[in-house]
Length: 217
Image 1 (cartoon, helix red, strand yellow):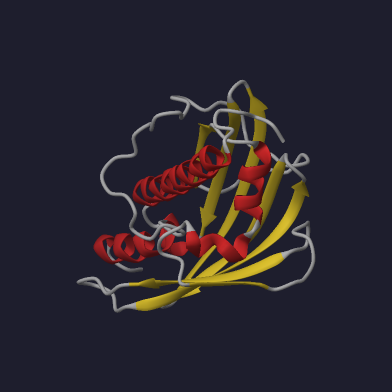
Image 2 (cartoon, rainbow, N blue to C red):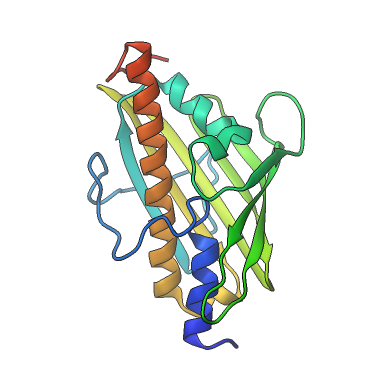
């Protein structure tokens, strides 16, 4: 089993995906986020891995139309245009983004004092999807001897002035299970960074279109 420093360094390079090393320090509740998100996040009755020790849940209210937010989240091939750290991404299927769709994405993990530079490859498969409502995908991330399995659920609900985006994710694997508190902290930083990027991009597009602060589909 790797020592704690090695585990944390390797785990950090993976769990901060898709915004690699985008945040540091403790996870704070950002503006627009619920202080204590309540209730499991599910899509068509399915949620995250119930047996996973590493899990994190958060939410954010985004002042943009639901259609704008949904387009950003499902047009996966354009993730690099608004998410730092993603080097390449490709759809592995054709047609509308739906249950069964899959995509493979990579991010470069820089060298650390204890690990060499490596490229992480994540293959995600959509298990459940309801248009303008929710998405659930699963899949492994590999690279540099790592193997971590993730389950990620998103829920989108129109509210007054915008859309409440809720997300929950779990990770399993020997590297993350070796230090659950550190892995959970890093997972939280990654999800908060994703929500921040989604919010800022969607809000900006909504403002340019002339309809900020709306939940119009």
